[in-house]
Image (cartoon, rainbow, N blue to C red; front, side, top):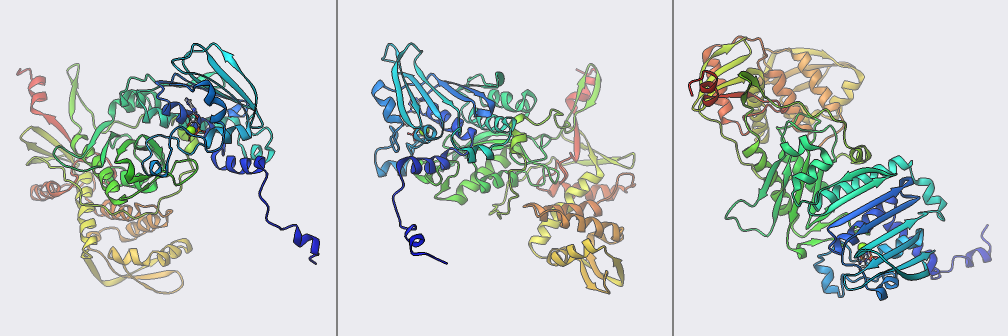
Length: 582
Ligand code: ADP
Ligand code: MG
């Protein structure tokens, strides 16, 4: 029963400043990596060319960020810890075009609300540094100390007085992984800055600060990946658009089993944006095997007023005024880089022996530390794309010479010999034909004179019920026939004469996988794979010519939809060299 007194306890009151400070701090400082993020951003905003980060006990013991930036005048030190104190914006107009990483004036007071902080800073025109120590958000000590130009912020005993928050922290290793992931992103966004990250005394990351993105990629993803990355650029010469994209896209033969290797920077701010990530993934469609994800570093620049960064306290999300344009530019930049530069793997010679170099196997190195931290955190994407038609790769005119091993088609082109994998090539052809026909709702269907009865498992039955639409879209006409059997009345024409129950089971497996943005592609890939000629099947010359002719029509003739090469190239120059004609 309610008592009068209890009702009165619900009166509205203004919270004491320590409490409101803690609430605000909770939004900015979620975990140790948030502190690192804010401090790095402050260093970058201060034009530092070197940023060193030291972390102990997963950041709960100590986080120290040292930069060589422009520093703060002595009188500003205490001010910097006031809520809403910032040197970066002055008016509401400024908020509409934010050019710095920070602007909320919240980070330092928030950090000081949940940790003990010391700041030591020396601007270029001072002969010594000033330091300020704060406990519970209040200055307790200030003085001067010798130090190089720049700023050092030391954060001690993070969350020591917030046992609830501390309880949510995972192990120091997990927190360190988050920190490593984060610093890696900033290292990629700012290749001209030399980043050093030491975790528990170990050097976890060190970049050169050379200004070359490939150098930063080498420090983060390894030299092998860095060497293979393809530069991208949008717009191409002559096009006028306020949106510019540059960066590096991984070639299709380097892929990863999880998302999270796509780094997005908008006006040099590291952001997380599902749609843009999806734009990148889309650009790889048909080039990567199902379930594989690309590595890419995308640097998107657009007029400041086109982006709203004041969306979230951690500033990790942004909104675009014209999201579709940004989406299309990113997708085209990546696609263009892939189509222009991911070559037909060619045969090169080593010490006189011809060695094929098709798609190199993925570097066997374990995923970098930071990636493991991200794994599992990226939810599946469910946003539909507004994909514009993408440019097509062209194939030289090829003349079929013959077949070898009932598996490869030998063809001659203007630049030498092409060996075509008949299954991979046919798969590519069928895949694109299926996608086009499906779009036009004109997929060829083959009615069965004698309906086939298929028996399904309970799980398969659930899948059929859930995906009836997709099945019929692809040409399967099914009719319930008893508890766990279906009558198949029609099938996709490409499957005529193939092993129906095998293909159908494969199909259901793909549909039963967790809904992925590329599910429809995967369905088409499965169909193409089931329908394509197999290795070991002998083909007549006319059939091979037909296959090559259709391959020439394909948008992406060089790889099968799983991402394997459809052909390898042995150049005339190589032949001449090997036969010592030159
Ligand atoms: P914001 O970055 O949003 O302005 P912060 O609380 O992070 O807010 O920082 C407050 C102010 O302190 C900044 O505006 C800046 O003037 C100063 N500052 C913080 N860190 C540094 C640094 N490493 N070098 C120079 N100035 C700094
Ligand atoms: Mg800041």
